[in-house]
Amino acid sequence: MRSSNNRLWFLWQVKRLSLIIASTSITSSKIQVNGVHLHYQQTGEGSHAVLLLPGMLGSGQTDFGPQLKSMNKQLFTVVAWDPRGYGKSIPPSRDFPPDFFERDAKDAVDLMQALKFKKFSLLGWSDGGITALIAAARYPNLIHKLVVWGANASVTQEDVRIYNGIRDVSKWSEKVKKPLEELYGHKYFAETCEAWVDGISRFAENADGNICQQLLPDIECPTFIIHGEKDPLVPQAHAEYIHKHIKGSRLLLMPEGKHNLHLRFANDFNREVENFLR
Image (cartoon, rainbow, N blue to C red):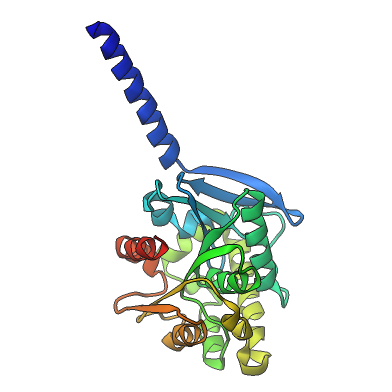
């Protein structure tokens, strides 16, 4: 009898371990959406689906390691995508037509629907934050909650000056540059960065430098805006503008945070975001 009980206990432990491994592993796949094969990573088994949207030249691999690894996988199913032309969603090569943020927003939402998520939350960093703002406004019935950081709804002449300061990737720090060069190769990395600077700078020619200012009042879901007070790429006025124009939104300023605050202060960031998403 004892031998039988020991065997049952052993089998139960094996099954339990298998379930833990399945829920914590990060899978990687591609799915066809809007005529392109989009790469994504997925982890967790929670009922609350969350999409992570990376910044310029970003991917799940380069931009969201601490979130894919450490967000609560019992509460959340976490998906990190590579927008078309970024990461492993190549081909096609990345381009920046006037509607590239709108295109990314549609791709992101259609990706989650292709993965059979009926409703989901968005966590968008930098360009991914802009994409998330547009998606939340355009598809209010699909978006549960919204978190953005390092995002802006317009482009000023000061922003254009900042963007031109990062045009030459040879001047980037080795820590930031190395993973992107490994992912893309130097030529694609350098040329795409230059094309991005040109593409986003064109918004400064619009009235008030508009990217998506007019859409902010259409965002209905609970919204959490996070901003690093030492962000060298996105002035704090952008976060304050977004906060002011999204009804009921919450703004958190992180005194020591820079543009990549979710990486440098991953534990604090994950805790704040998880509390909000709950």
